[in-house]
Amino acid sequence: MQKFWTSVVTFAQTVTQQVGERLLTEFGTTQAMTKADGSLVTPSDQWADQFLRQAIGTVFPEHGVLSEESDHIFPPQAWCWIIDPIDGTTNFAQGMPIWSISLGLLYQGIPVFGLVHVPPLQQTFHGFWSAPEQNNGAYCNQRPIHTRRDPPGANQFLAFAPAA
Image 1 (spheres, rainbow, N blue to C red):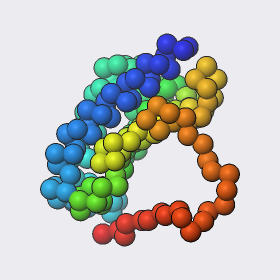
Image 2 (image 1 turned 120 degrees about the vertical axis):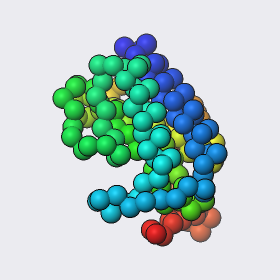
Image 3 (image 1 turned 45 degrees about the horizontal axis):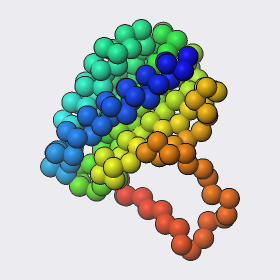
Image 4 (image 1 turned 135 degrees about the vertical axis):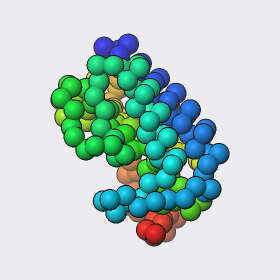
């Protein structure tokens, strides 16, 4: 099982890095369109979605895929990747550097792995749940991270971008 988890992490890091490199060249220069459900999509979202779906199908052909940019029908496979090709499309289209490529992996509907790659910040976060051989926990750029034990204070900052 260790080999499987290593392949999952390596794949997710590699494919999101590849997608991120291309998206950085399109960042802030593409026009967003409104989908039928009212959310935004760009040609970059559509390209990234197709690239990720094809990569998953090649490396993990027995896994299902559910993406924000495709039909929202949960696949029947035990293993299922969840994709948001550009998490933060509004920011991406407006040139705000807080957007990411998000991948999750479910086993029988239960989240077991997730990875968020933030190309403008050159940071990649990933974590495991229910994979004891992987030292369950969260990582930033391959280093373990933990929640802070102290309460929020004046030296901490969090910001949100308004929706377009």
